[in-house]
Amino acid sequence: MANHISLSKAKAIAEDIRNAVKEIAAKHDIDVRKANMKWDDCGLDMSIALRTTSITGVPQEFIDDFNHFQLAIPKDRLNTTFDYSGTKYTLVGFKRANTKHKYIVQRYDGKMFKFPASALKAAMGINQ
Image (tube, one colour):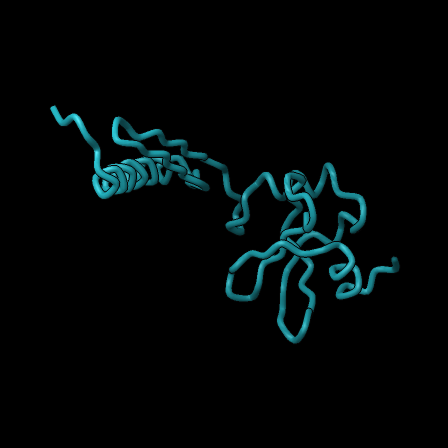
């Protein structure tokens, strides 16, 4: 029995656990959204967040929050594509936990970004 856990060993263990959980989650159509690790000489603490995902690959909670909590953008604008600084984005959700930029947009290549309501309204032609 080891009386010490090195950082490299802790990272390797955490990665093995994360991969095992990803395999299990994939069987149930759930994504591993976040996995955090705290480590010291005596042990390893991990937390892993699992979330359902919509058919588009966007976390379902973003879509639910858009439909229930946001007020600035009409609900029928969800999944609307717009142009911002010459790049195409699609409004995919709303994350109420974000303190500043609560709207979630997805770029044409699938990468997601936080977006301010004012810029979103201007890009979509919504009157302030």
